[in-house]
Length: 213
Image (cartoon, rainbow, N blue to C red; front, side, top):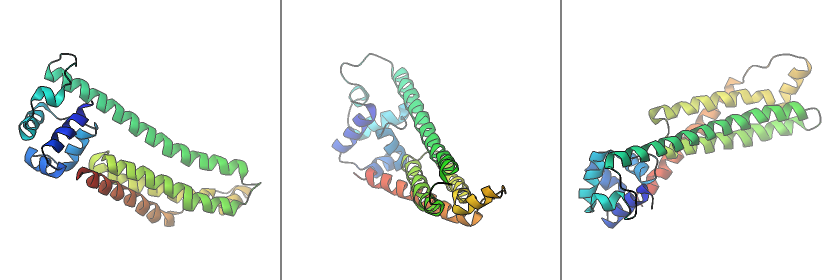
């Protein structure tokens, strides 16, 4: 069983919610949630406090009977490094996915705009593909509480990216024929911003609801 699962099981056996445990341990509910989901790892002081709060021994809380004998410090450091590595990979995958979809939208338009309904393509991209991509990405950021207080800047980033989506509209096709430059449509920035913020808030609410289980 993973360490986070052991901590969650111990809390539930003690009939405590994440909010109740967090208040007693002196941390935020999000921190307790991150521990239980393997997104971060508690320091040794928090482990001792949980042991007392959940009325379980340190050995039972952190180790399975057949686990390799390690000092608690080594055990915590190893677990923390694994969690941090996995989190960095997840963030990188998310960023590359968003950039990939955004870039492919431009490439697909450049290759197909002369042979398809440019207006239909532009509408589908502007009002479906990109908003859904930005909302889902923001939802993940909010649910996993990535980047701390800086996560709200994702709204501005996605808003700017959405403002540039006008470059793959039917208007862009005309500009391409005339070899002119089309500047970003900053009128779309608030829309992208709101979609992203809505995604982050939805993610935070989903994680909060999960924490009450």
